[in-house]
Length: 187
Image 1 (cartoon, rainbow, N blue to C red):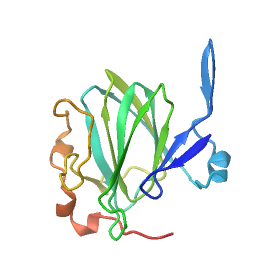
Image 2: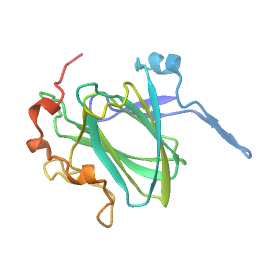
Image 3: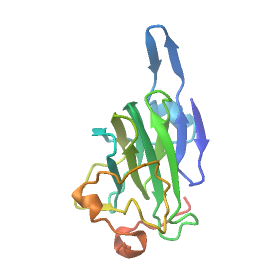
Image 4: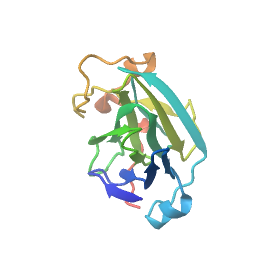
């Protein structure tokens, strides 16, 4: 297993070791001991799976209070996954990182607490898995606009995405109520 840093502190790309042969493959998607040895001390409390079709964009979502760190990967299909630093006072506030995650490349992305997260589906369908460090709290969930021009995410889309009503009404970062945004800590 390899961990690669990204331009956003705390957001890491994980390359699991995959053992494959003519029968298929085997990989460990999560191993607390191995992740801890690589510097990721994580405690997951909830697993989520979503199925979406091509053109769907989910996000950009975050919770505050009760923020969630998320370990994500595609079980089937391909997505373009994005993390946005929304921590007030962070040196990378408003910056984003994106990565294609697919069943074929086996890559995982860890998005720590304090980041907005979203993805768009590039394949016909995608089965997407999340491990979360805190429970879902609908009262604490907020949405950041997927197309906020101040952030400038370069989504690999050739037409407007299909959004939920909640995501259509999301705030731009500069309009986000201050109390919704987490505060940066150098821990």
